[in-house]
Image 1: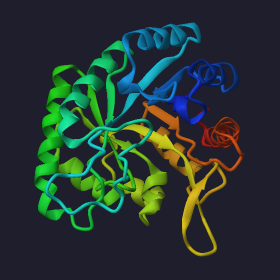
Image 2 (image 1 turned 90 degrees about the vertical axis):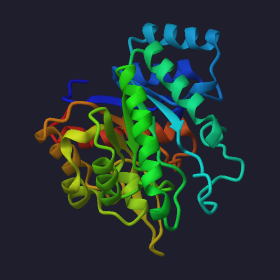
Image 3 (image 1 turned 30 degrees about the vertical axis):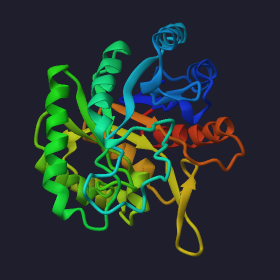
Length: 292
């Protein structure tokens, strides 16, 4: 695909069978890039040396490069704060089951995997969402800054995802954190779908707020509004987000990093077919935006 962006897909959104996911990404979707979060029913941080070697072999076989390591760094409760209503009872998210005390290990492992898979980007969050994060915000920002500085030592960019279940969900919240953690290798993983889930209008209003030079990765999924006013995931092109406008604006602003399909929607029955339909919508929107 000829695009100003690194057009990608998160492989485990298609299937946990890594080679099958790569086959679809490269031969069916026509992509040159993939995003890694989990495979073989394991979080990427839990892969052993043999599995890492096999993953690298398969990526080389299908001629796919890695946009980033989609780690679960800081997707945990903030210690001393009230328990978040978004905190999973078993703490399991995409195969991740790490405590706050293990976050140094998560960071170190993520940085090592970035090196092994040949990428300069590592995704993170800023802790399960609190009703009032204000008493803890300065300490959270200090934790993010410290992690970014450690990443800088390894020449890795730390990408904060605006996640609707974490403390940075909306564009306004993202702007505040980016201003507080003002270091060159701390950038935003902009996710318009997640921002909608917290009542934000991601494009054009939300995007217009963002410092464009601080966007280092983009997740692509869509959101539909039910008659009762609640939101649910949708295939790309079937929701409320103006992705054509968003892609066009990213292109005009000189963005050239990843736009990565994170399907989430399961309306086609299986993750594979749902991702196939969502990719068809995303491809059409990229083309209409003049970005493919």
